Structure formats: C-alpha cells, structure tokens
Length: 155
Image 1 (cartoon, rainbow, N blue to C red):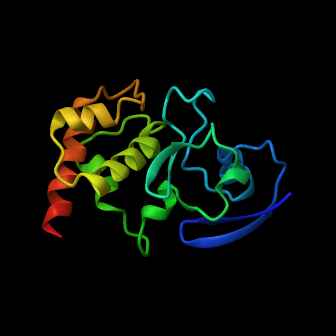
Image 2: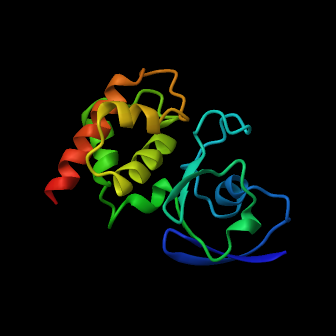
C-alpha cells in the first residue's frame, strides 16, 4: 500500500504492508533508529514519538494511520547538528546510562514542555510514568527535564 508520511518536516512516500507499525517503518524503511523496540506491548515507552503534538507509542500504531499527520522522532529534534536543549540537559544531568530509554524519555519530555513550560517535579514524574528506565532511576531524569524547562523559559 502506498502511503505518505511527514516525518521530521520531510515528506516520505513509502510502499508498506498495511499491518506494519510506525516503529517498524521508521526503523526499517526510513533508517530512523532513535525510537527503540522495547516491549512491543506499549509498556516501556522506548518507542515514543510525537504525532501532532502528542507522545505516541509507535509500536502500537499502524504506519498507515498516520498519513497527513506531523510525526517527530528524536532525530528531528536536532537543528543543524545541534542537540535540542532537552537532549543536552539529559547529558548535563547524567540522566543517561545505557541510553535505550533515552529517546523515548526525551520525546515524552518534549511533549510535556511544549504544553506545560513550568511543570512541577510531581507533574514531570506523572507525565513520564509510561517510560521505563532500568538504569538511572528517575531522579536525574526529573532533574534534566526541570533544567530543560528552566532554559527553555529563558529563550
């Protein structure tokens, strides 16, 4: 089936099987490997992308259901090779260890800060509750998101 997806601001015409997930198409057909395949059941958040401003689990959504929608992956956050402030703050706050969950957490954090530029720690923790990190714990992740929010408010 021929579909057109708008990913990271670019239009992509693809021929895909109707039962393929957006995660599969992003990783296998478009070589956008930031979103990770963690559980394939929607429990870990490693595959999170932003679709029309909302964090979505790409392992649970069919690629064909996303025509005419704005899809942003973690690769789409960089600007001329420069990391987005959220990505930088994850590094600065050592909120990364193995890194498997990081792209999903970054995308979830972006969706939160796009809608709530001044979240409390409780709101941050609540918003990222669908993202599992087995390495860092969540304190440094919350610190990174709070720090990113502070910097974004200054811009």
